[in-house]
Length: 466
Image (cartoon, rainbow, N blue to C red; front, top):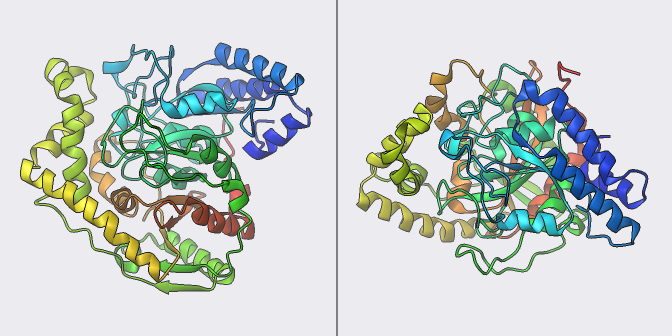
């Protein structure tokens, strides 16, 4: 039952072929069986989830239907505030932190009838790309337990891939939804900056943070995105733009879409098997669209000695953490503590101001690219997931892991990762599709058409336990 897609589970609930309690019990059983191995969850809210499931079933019996997420078990990255439930950001510093209010996205999920089954593990304070650095221990990739699931939303991706929930939320500052989606063989979507409220999210970078869904299919992603998207009057970065019917958008004909491939730098130094998978995916896209052509996009020059994203999130992360770092440095994992200090101290005040200004300029300049093409396509990541051990290597490897992902956080564009193949070792490969600002519907349309033209999304990890 837990192997159903979100859409499939929702349809069965609506037909009363299954109950919300049964769906929740199936997920809880999967969590009990597999989480000791995967370490995808920090907190499991079984009692609250079953109580909510009973409430959703009772509402359904009375004919009240809140929508497609009614009665659907969903997991939340543990940097999204949940009222009355601890929110740790995978850090000893916050191990007993219990917020009094829900994050805005959590409030919207609850209003839509979603059932929250727990809080997922992550790279501490979302400050890394492996999810191996956590006070609660490393997250393991369900396709290869000795390997990372990617980060920082590694627990959300692993839980979704392993059918411990029907979908999840993560956050993405430099690829932290898309990279884990690629490594774990699921769909991960970072929307346009401002499309989804960040209120109630423990920040890494106010300028670059995005909330986004991780799901088994593009159709599921459209359903989840439709619930959490929209303006939040209390969130200063939120943009008041109409939210289209993303599920209806999946029926959009893709034959007239123009696809651009920015070869440099996104196709440079690819692992040979990822290169092969992405090349095959582009052949499929040529059949689905009017054209696939090479394009140039605005170059993102470094600021001083740092890439622009580090020149932004280094000082912003330090600003959030500075008082705790001074008072309780021992409560941070050493790689996180070192990164907080190093990435901020290497950026001058002048460089930070220049980086912020350049980010604003780039977000305007990138729009010009979409006069010639409707979408951009790249590999999500350049190489397969590495092993968890040794832990000491992970900070050094993040630059390579995120090189294809972080530019689109700087540009603020909607970007999705969809499965497009597997290596000979059985590790998933992701294809990244990027759209113009607030063109989430177009991104979803092509991603869905590609997904339906291939079989990759139908493969699931064969977990060792249970």
